Each structure stands twice: as structure tokens, then as C-alpha cells.
Image 1 (cartoon, rainbow, N blue to C red):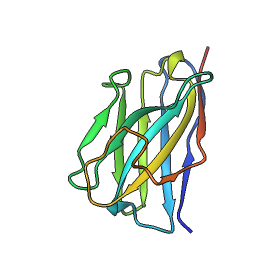
Image 2 (cartoon, rainbow, N blue to C red):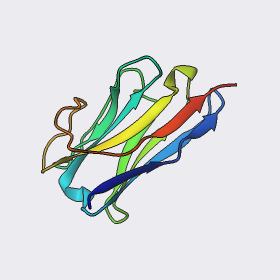
Image 3 (cartoon, helix red, strand yellow):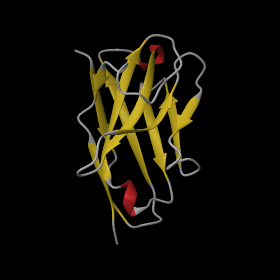
Length: 125
């Protein structure tokens, strides 16, 4: 059974940091492009960052550029999202998703076949 499990969310003060993990089971992440998405209350889900399976290239939404870093550890079959300098507007449920194939990643939801259950990130003082 193919499964993605996010972890690492929680409550953090503005300016703080969190590292989210996206662990895969039932398949090898090496051959999947991975995206991180988030959905805040009352808003549509949006792409945050993604990492390609073809060349490891990474992409970020303008709102997180310079603060978030996506990386993958193929040995652990896990993708990470390091989030620094967190702001209240980063509060959302964060999801990881996997798109099969050797390809350049996208922050459009459509191509992603597999999704995790989400992890809550709350940035508040």
C-alpha cells in the first residue's frame, strides 16, 4: 500500500522554526517528484515548494522563498521541509504529495497522485 505520512507540525512562535517530514511507505521516493502544499482556514490549498525527481531542482512559492528549504533523503525515503522565520500567515495544514516518474516537479496539484493526511502548523505568540 502506497502511503505518505507527514510529521513535525506543531505550535511555534513567530520567528521560530519547524522541520516537516514526509515519509513514504510502499514505494521509493527516488522516482517521484514531491510537493508540499498548505491550506489555511477559509482558503484554497496552495503550493509551497517542490523537488524534482529528474535533477533535484527545487521550487518555492514567493511567500516562502528564502525562509523554507525542501530536501530529500533517499536513504530514509523521506522528504523534508525546513521552515525558518515563521510568520502567523504560515499557519495552515501542510500536505506532501508524490507524482510518479522521473520529471521536473510542479506546484500545481493536478499531477500529484498520492497525498498524505496533513500536519497542522500554527504560528502564534
